[in-house]
Length: 228
Image 1 (cartoon, rainbow, N blue to C red):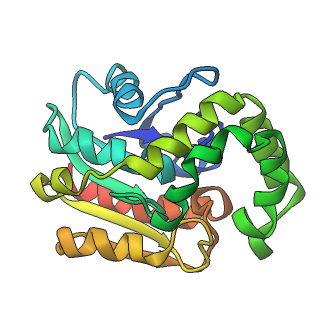
Image 2 (cartoon, rainbow, N blue to C red):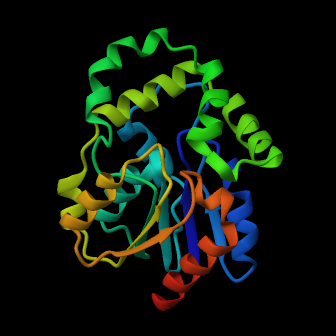
Image 3 (cartoon, rainbow, N blue to C red):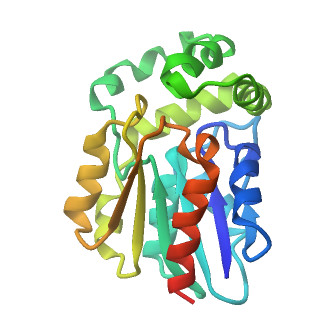
């Protein structure tokens, strides 16, 4: 079984290293990365992800945070070989509608300062460690302000709810109880549209896969194994 991993806002895929290690050799993983120096919308990110989809054998796709809408859109199109969808701390439509009012101000945000602000308590909270902060800094340092602004603007405008409704494959949603980035209503919205989706909640921050890779890998592996 193969697992395709679509990254969060940094888009590098570097932050999947702990999860990949926890999954072990039983699973072949394909880590998608997006260009760090280009201002792309969701459709353009999706086109990049599609280029790396497996050409043979069954696989599941995991969309983390920013990439949730991409994973949903790909799954709705029913590509050959895809047998399941995993969503992690993510959304089908703009999870912060109030903030969308300020998208015209994105050009004024000094994104070089954002990582320090988000890491504690926003991203890691009480789970913050020196190594996690270092890994996050390294990932974000590879992404330009232009690319980050474009991704945040895309979040403000996205809505793949109709595509989610078209999905007939099994869905697993991983949710964090202490996620201060994506509100719980985002998961509730997904469950309303896809009531058969399996929801698993962890006592963790937004970066669930990085803070609790072994626990997350166990659930992901169990879900994927059932689909073989």
